[in-house]
Image 1 (tube, one colour):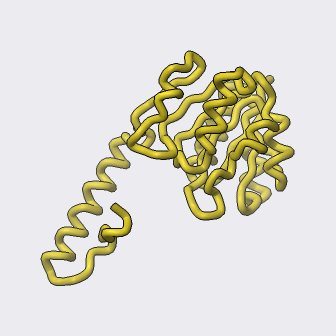
Image 2 (cartoon, helix red, strand yellow):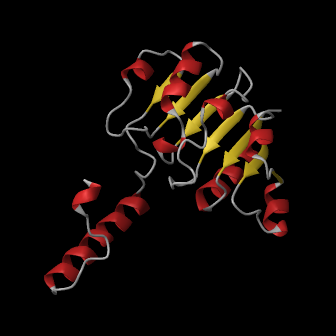
Length: 179
């Protein structure tokens, strides 16, 4: 059977692992911290302390980790070259985790078989070279488009507005340097 390598085993990565097993995929993962042994056994998941070793052994890579200074270009050109030529990458977390220029070159040269991208390194801009590739599926950042996700976003907006109107600093304020 095929092997999926999950990069980031938080809530979303764990949910993905459960679903992947239902499709007969062997679950492998890399995470900052190893899962509790009970959960790891329940998921029948194999932990890889070394991301490089995991990448060299999986058929599908699912990126589910946040973008932080430590994860910027975590999947850089060197690491992407570790993937097997038949590998597929799926990124539904943050575009900055993958070196998009390197990924595009490797997809074009067929060093990587395919990619499914819901996020992009320079969002909202999408690299036009990605659009020309027939081995890529591009989505307009729809991973959070769930009823629960949209309700949570709406509640946050209401809390921010109410906090501001009450004369306090909103919890999710936007700084000019962020725009």
